Image 1 (tube, rainbow, N blue to C red):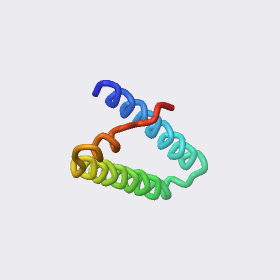
Image 2: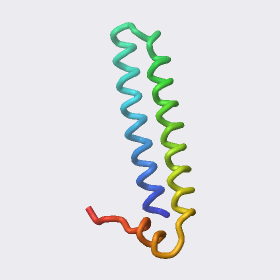
Image 3: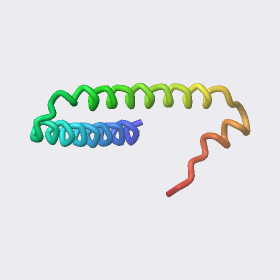
Image 4: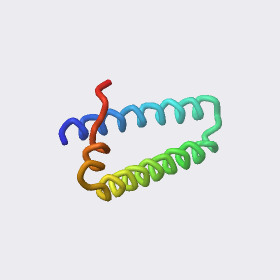
Length: 77
């Protein structure tokens, strides 16, 4: 659980850094009015990510026995 929390925190920081860079560039070139598109994209990405996580979690709960063991196996990269 701790590893997943640390990984999620790191990914969140990376996303915030990218958003900050894109919004900073928009401000520098005088296109602050286009920032809504950046925020819309970030919000939609968050919703899709949340839906995928809930869906994968529900899918994982649906399996039992050998199928569950098969789904939970993760390759070491």
